[in-house]
Length: 265
Image 1 (cartoon, rainbow, N blue to C red):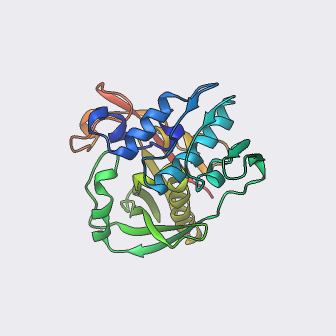
Image 2: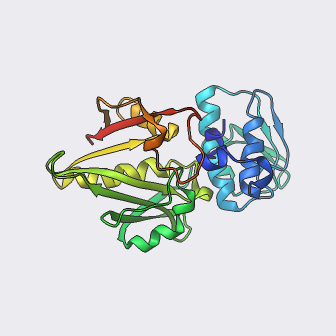
């Protein structure tokens, strides 16, 4: 449910409700109410408009995937309509009931640029485990333009060459982070895949190992562009997890499950 409203940050999942930001509390409250015939007042009224759009986009996908019926949202904002794509919407401006299925979601234009390692400072606190960044990594900055809006910074991806003894021309994903306000739009997998495709197009083999359950589940799907390796869904001892004090994303025991994939395009 948390992922269903775009709250994809593992550190936030493991935090107390009282210390969450206004946008995080909005999403957490919304997640608790995702059920048939829910009536949700003041939808997105107290949050940044980017959070409102991202949560609306994620909510629409959740409703379709889980066949939620009879949900009614009340809001004083119309900017969410094309992102939410409700079946029907009523506005007090004209007093008419409109077919929301005719609405088209704005284009999400993503651009990726090579960048310096210092850019990591904008993103490190949002990584689900470690704030460290390798000195030998290649780094990329991701921006988006939502519809007619200007380009804004939203994500970071870095990758590393594999040790030469392991595999010739082998590379692996190092860090991928999307800023919280823009989570829920599917940007994280897209920028990860884009960098992976660049590596494959240049003749490299590209791998990723992650403990994030949402990323791992996406790559396990057929036709995701990723192929499981023999180490996929293996357990990893706690002493090998460089979490720097952050909470474990999928279990507090001595071991946790890790996803391992090779990108095939």
